[in-house]
Image (cartoon, rainbow, N blue to C red; front, side, top):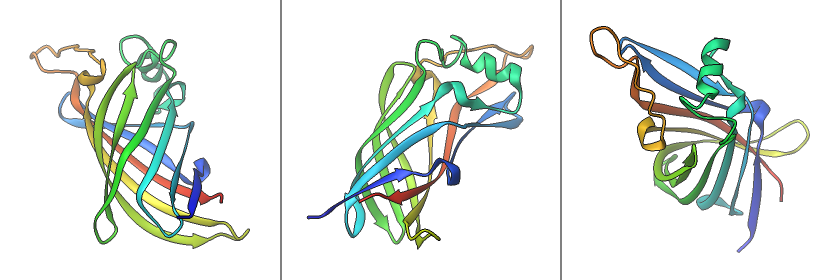
Length: 177
């Protein structure tokens, strides 16, 4: 079996998260620095190994004060835990271009299993002759399961920020070998 290695093209990829604020609106943020890759069978991505690392200090919600708070020990504790990592243990085609991606997510020193939905968007050769493939990936996690326990309440007793975090990534991979 031939093996193909792929690396994430950070210029043509993005990683975002969404979380409710006051339960009435959604805040969107992103991580601007990340790296990752995959190892697959030459002909497809069935059972591919996928790995990813996000730089917590690159968090960006378009509000500097909020970004600094998110980097603090109240949330990600970037000084002690500078990276969020993912290592797959299962990548399987469900139907058509839809895949299930499961693996271990490590956030703030806590490692837990997570399952994500992935959609294969196709393959194309770029101007330099490199083969590229694209995937859209989505999933949800409970922030408290990963030690993000900030629990400020509103005057009415509701949470200032929601419990569930939606993960959204658009990933372009470049074939290496």
